Image (cartoon, rainbow, N blue to C red; front, side, top):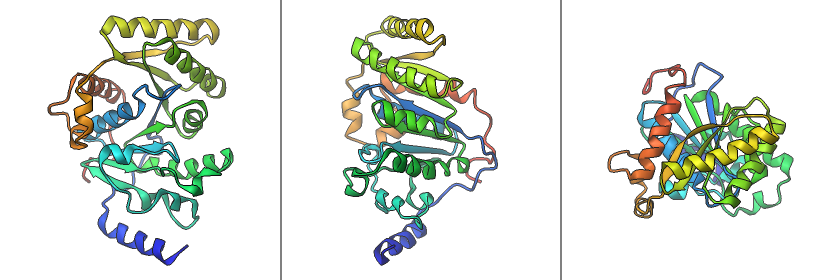
Length: 280
């Protein structure tokens, strides 16, 4: 390891604050995936994580797209240590975690790093396995999986307790979502899979899209999906993206964020209480 990297680690440790280690080892880990890009997966993951944190749960948001990470950009934070440092055995995943707001931390991903570009699937899985060792230190973990099939499947295979699928009502998006569900079902048949339909015109639009996807899953896979709700098309999200603070506070949230916070509350009501009180 270089002297520069060691110096960065030391200075980062002086500035960062972390939650105390959790007692439980069965932390709720929600992998947010989509069959294709453009479904709103990253904003869904971010808003859910912010909602959990606002409710007092120590929450880790993991950017699961190893070399196309964008959560640090959305949140307006800069990793103190380059995420590619995680490839070095003596750099701990904990060293890379960035505090975002009260009860919310980010495990960032690299963006266009040469070191990640040539990694094999096995090496990528090894990196994500190292990241998953952080999970027991938090009450909830939200993983923003890479768009597409392979990345989401890899994230779901590592300590996930459920997969939250994000799709839109368009036929191509539903087809891609079904392809991912099929792969996950084949590898992890007992993993709960839930669904939100994003960018809908109204509740009926979301319900109809969910019914089509669920019908295919029942017919060809013999399994049911749990529908969590529709997220309306919200042109105000463009304005929210210009101010990262608007993405982590509920006050003044638009229709889409309000709907996602409602989903977060529903999921939170089913989670066990935190093993260590927030702020302890």
